[in-house]
Amino acid sequence: MQRKSTLGIPYGVLAAAMYILCLYSGALATLLVAGYVLLKEKDEWMKTQAVKVVLLMLVFAVCAFVIDLIPDAISVVSSFLAIFGGSLSIPFVSSITRFLSVALSFLKTLIFLGLAYKSLSEKTIKVPFVDSIVSKVASGEATELKDLSNDFKEDLGAVKETLGKAKEDIVNAVDKASNKADETTEK
Image (cartoon, rainbow, N blue to C red; front, side, top):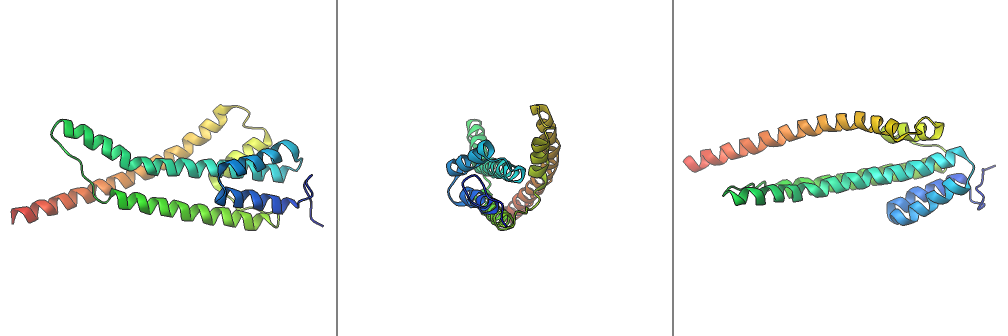
């Protein structure tokens, strides 16, 4: 026998609906359903799924925002350098940001469809950063923003390290391309 919500909908179906809504309908519909679950439902698994979908939605929105900022940041730096007669042109940035956007969208689709499928049987897929926050919120450990901030800082440190390595790789690739161009010009 399936456990049902106060609406008479099985919990697994309601959780799957939240993930599918987030993937295809957007933030408003997801927040409305998640808000209903958090306010009206008594089941802890269901509340955990509501918090998880909202956190994942926020994580993917922030990642997409950061990716969209990359070309704008380069444009600002280029405009600033133009004041002093310099220029900054990285022609493959738009290709990289397009690739990152598509990869992020693909990853989001995989995660949300996987979570929706697993939730039909009232199970879940572990998403490390999000699950650590959800478990702290559910257990009442993270009653202060400071606890969440510390977890975020730890994860942000790992992200910064990865981005630092990526930056070094990009700078090296640009230097190599610039040196090749200089060699070609000299010939």
